[in-house]
Length: 291
Ligand code: GUN
Image 1 (spheres, protein in one colour):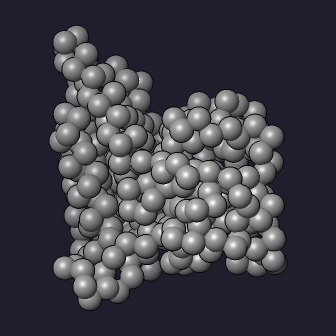
Image 2 (cartoon, helix red, strand yellow; image 1 turned 90 degrees about the vertical axis):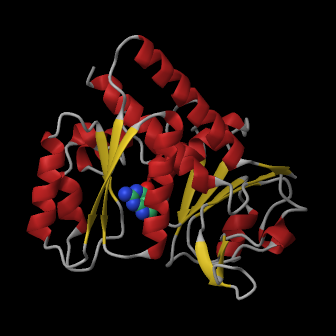
C-alpha cells in the first residue's frame, strides 16, 4: 500500500507558486490577490476559508475576506459581487459554498466574472472544461488530477468509478478522467444515489474516487486487490475524545481497505490540502492572464 501524501504534494505545489511569485516580484509584476466571500456562520466553511487565507500568506499572495451575515439578500450579495468584479486589484475570488437557502446558488455563480472565477464554477468555465478548452478547473477535481499525476497512477484504459455526481467534485472529475489527455483516457462510471449494486461496481474498478460524504462507507470487501482509492469525503463525526468534539472522517474505512489497495489518500491530509493549492494556482493563472 502506498499512501498518497496530499499535505506533502500540496506543500510542493505551494512552493512552486511561491517561486513564481518571487520571479514576479523581481520583474516588478503584480502580486496575485485572492478574495473570498463567506456568507453566514457555518463552522466548516469558516475553517476552509481561513485555510485559504493562510495559504495566501504562505505564498505571498494578497487576500481579502468579505464576510456577510446570513440575512444578506440575494440582490445585496449580487451587488457585492459586481463590486469585486470591477475591483482591478482583485485577480480572482470565490463564493464559499454552501450559501443560505434563500439565496439561489446558480444565480450567484453566474454573476462572478468568468475572468476572476478561480473556482471554475461559472457556466462559461464549466463549459470550457467540459469541451477540454484551457480554463480554471474546479479546485477539488484539479487537486485529484494533480495527486494522480504526481503519484504516477496510470489512468489510460483503466476502469475508474466516481461515486457521487456533485457539481463540485463528482461530475467534473468524471469528465476530466474520460478526456483524451495525459491524465485521462479512463473508462469512467459515475455512481450515485440511484445506482444499483455499488459493491459490484467497486470490485470491478481499478480506480475509485469517492465523494459521497458517508463516513467509512467503502470497506475492504468492496475493493479489488491493488486498486487505487481517492477519498474525497470529509465528514465531521462526533468524537468526545477529541478536543474539538469531532474528528474528520473519509468515505473509506481505511483500516479494512489499506491492506488491499495499491494507492490510497488519507483523510485528513489527502485531497483536502490539494484543493487549497489548486485554488491558488488558478489565482496565479488569473493574475498572469491580466498582466
Ligand atoms: N465548498 C466546498 N467545496 C468548495 C469549493 O471548492 N469552492 C467553494 N467556493 N465552496 C466550496
